[in-house]
Each structure stands twice: as structure tokens, then as C-alpha cells.
Image (cartoon, rainbow, N blue to C red):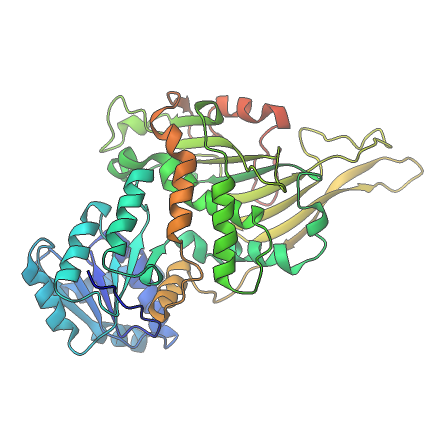
Length: 470
């Protein structure tokens, strides 16, 4: 097979496979509308799906989506988006579908193909594109999950690489498009005061929590095939770990950032059964599409080690779950206590010592917790937070930012092949060999067994609405 040539310019068309599906409805259409409002969308958008729709039906679907997810506040932008839309109906296994797509693309030579479809169809679509010469000079966007284990991730990468160069494969994880996530990278390397303490000498442990106060919301079938470890931790939380744990990039450029992130994944110690606690909220088995005796986890907590010079011996505690007490994403970097206890009240109380806290959602904040002396003669004090909360009015939503980047060929916020495979290698040992799930009540912080996981280094610090409830 001849080597496919890399294309580095602006795409001249967007093809949306699965245009009638939920992902397009909930995320992609609002993102396209936002790009149109900014004046950043000026290329044909061709939807492809099996449904025998008329173009008018697709238009109505787009309008309904935008009305539900944000509202219509710029009729000119909406009209512009609708004028760009085209639609091809057909079976992905039928070569004629791709011939019709090629005709619909007209003079476009450098399309971006977005696979907003189940992963089981990826190979079929890629082969159809390749057979009709729709991969040359093109890009492809692949939605997570990037496989469901190491073997399937490697196979997915092999299939994509058979038709596209690595630089033209965009593995989209909306989490990386969040402003607060990018701020972690900036905060770490734009401030010199962190580097002397950002290592095993001063950091006792790191906790990362991604909690949601709702259940699977009708997506029981999806969750039965995925589970919390695959859905959230192996990708979203591991990406946060990489940003926190990586070495300073050797030069200013995202390729260097990707290199250092991949090194973190390769340095992660593969998980064993004792490193993982799996939970399932009471009532999950009554959800539509869920097996009556399901052992799928809706909660997962794990203890992770990074075998590197900087992080040797520092435990990283990650947890995520459905139907927890709050909807919040937060990082807590617990600092070691002073080497000598000069003041009687300076010991950590209820596991809470000095820390640095990154609030990632629902708002964005960075906080430093330190003890401050009370007024008076006695040397007693209280722990207080220096709290910086920052919001960005009019900021780009993750899908808007990432879709625009992919069309420009900017891969900075996308996941690279080697990082995907290295991350799967860490969790692969416990995907099949693990303990049964533990039940927990909705609106709690998960099963009690997760507390045992962290007991050697204190306890979980549960995020509250503005700070910590303890």
C-alpha cells in the first residue's frame, strides 16, 4: 500500500458520520453553531447516516438541538449553518454510500471525517473511505473510547493507520478542551515557586475526584459495556495525572508536551486487584438495559504509583462515580507536614494538612491551604485557604474548541497513539481480574471499602460546593 500523504492546511469540508445520533445532537450541532457565530465556519458540512431522511429533517434536528442546548440567539449564524448542511443516506457496508458521499463533497479535496458512531463501525467506515479515495489529504476524528482494552486499542490504531498518517488522526476527548484542564499545564510551568516542592520530598499524596450527582440516565446499555474505569478514569483522570506529573517539556511546543505526557503513562505501575475498589449504586440494576445481576462498576477508586525519580513512593488516589454527593471535579495535592512540630495545634486535623487544590468544575479555582496564627499572645491558629476563582465569560466550549482545532490541523489538545496504548497497559491487568462491586447509596461518596484504600495516607477529602466539607 502506498504511503498516505500528510495534509497540514485548513480542511475544506466536514463529514459527520452518525449525524442523526445523540452525540451530534447534544454536542456537535451546538459546537458548529458556536463556530458559525464566531465566523469560524465556512465549509460544507455533510452528514452521513442510515436513516432515510430528507435534508429538511436534518435541518429541524439541528434547530431542535441548538434550542435545547443553549438557545438560538443569532438567526444569521443559524441560517449560515443550515445553508452549509448536506445529507447522504446509506448503509456503511454499501460502497455506493461512499460514492454518494464523494459526489456530495464536490470539489472538496481535504475533508475531515468525524466518526460519531459506535467503535464497532470504525473499521467498516475507514475501509469504505479508503476504497473510494476519500482518505488522501483527509483527516479523521475518532471519538473515545479508544478501544476497550489494550488489544482493541492497538487494533483500532492499526486500522486508522492503514488509511491515515498519525498526524491526521485526531482522537477527541472533550475533557482536554476544558479551559480549567489547560490551566493546570500553565500554572505548573509558568510559576517558579512550585518546582522546588513539586516532588516526593514535599508531596505526601495526590487525590483526584470526578463526581457526578446523577445516575446513568437511560444509558444503562452503554454503561454495561463500559463501566466507570473505562469511561472516565483510564482517559479523563489519567490525562490530569499526566499534566500534574510530567517533567518540564524541553521546548515550547505541544509535541514536547505530548512526549512528556507519554513518559508519565509509561512510568505508571500496572494496577493489581488490591489497587482498585469498584462500587455500584443501589438501584443501578433496575435501570433499562442493565443486567439483573450486573457486576459493572458505576464507581471506581484506585491507588496509582508512578515509578519515576520525581514521584517514587508518592501514591496517587483517583476516584469517580455516578450518583455521588456532588457534581464536581477536583485535584488535591496534599503536602507533607513540617519536619518538626513546633506548635501543638499544627498537626493535620481530620486528615487536612497543607494542600494545593485545583477545582476544575463546576467552577474553576486554585487554592492554597496554610495555617495562620490567631490574634493574641498564644501561638495557635487555623488553616485558611488563599482562594482564586476565575471564570471566562464567552469562553469556547470544549467541542467548539476541539472541532475548530481539528479542522485547522492543530493536534495540541488531542491524544496520541503511544499515550493511548500506554494508558491501557496500566489498567489492562484489572479489567478482567478484580474484586466484585460493593454497593453504595445514592448521594453518598461511594462505598466504605474505598476508605481502606487510602487509609495509609489519611482519608478522602470530599469536595463541597465552595471548599471542603472534610
